[in-house]
Length: 330
Ligand SMILES: Nc1ncnc2c1ncn2[C@@H]1O[C@H](COP(=O)(O)OP(=O)(O)O)[C@@H](O)[C@H]1O
Ligand SMILES: [Mg+2]
Image (cartoon, rainbow, N blue to C red; front, side, top):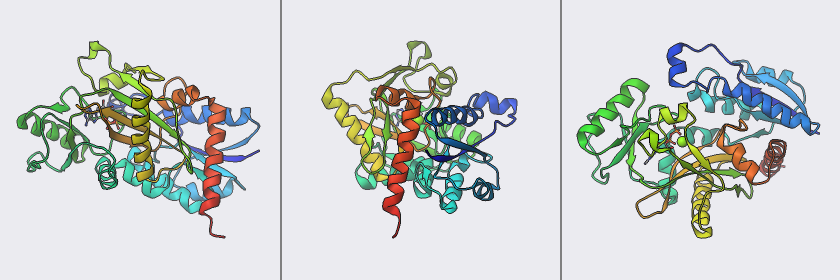
């Protein structure tokens, strides 16, 4: 029996503007916390709920002896603070599920993650950070390109205009991102091919769960996951994806290389798209994949891989504790 500290956000009031941009995410950590608690309790584990506040360190201490912390909280005030929570968890001295601070920070900024992938030889497109719409364009970038906020999630800032075909469209879309999302824009080569979501589970010897293909229905008139597609939960998921063994191995191997390059722990979900030569490229890595059964991709792939929600949370804890033992200086 494990004593699990479950760190999560209580749902908070959201303005109408915030809701319009991101209708689900503010409730998600609370919903996920309920599912995770239920999954642990089903197996006889003891769960101590710890709502996140600025007093997290004291609250973890006050929770008494914990074997492990399971964190589903995506930031104390904003999502950009996702890594801050892991920074605090690292200071508690209690093992926790999920990647450590360095990985969280690097993965959150898509340009930093791309730089690590490029250095490790993990396939990605050419990319450039635009701090303003007037920045000079690197000569190695070719149209069409794809423009997105440098650190967002849930398809925020992704529209039908994110794919740009010429310099005018590029500069307009960079302006849109910089002005509305108050952050630099990441410009990448546009990947025209099929899109996949890849769930990875484990730390010392991570496994790739059955791959999901994401298909955007024709009615959206686009083949990327725009904020509208995401808001309506409009994407069609095919799991396991219809792939030859060779294609599937290549995608799995590419996603694992990204996972290892960033030194991820326990779990991550990797977004992959095929380029014009049908070769998998990494779009991004999500180091805190949502775990809401029936809605999020990760639990779907876990289930197809033979892990019920209870199996999954238990496995994540076992992986975290095994990795913790290895890291300990004795
Ligand atoms: N370089 C790219 N080429 C083509 N489509 C892309 C590219 N990068 C992202 N996309 C599309 O935009 C979607 C959202 O991008 P992503 O970086 O995964 O952002 P988020 O963090 O919001 O999920 C992807 O699911 C994919 O459909
Ligand atoms: Mg994504």
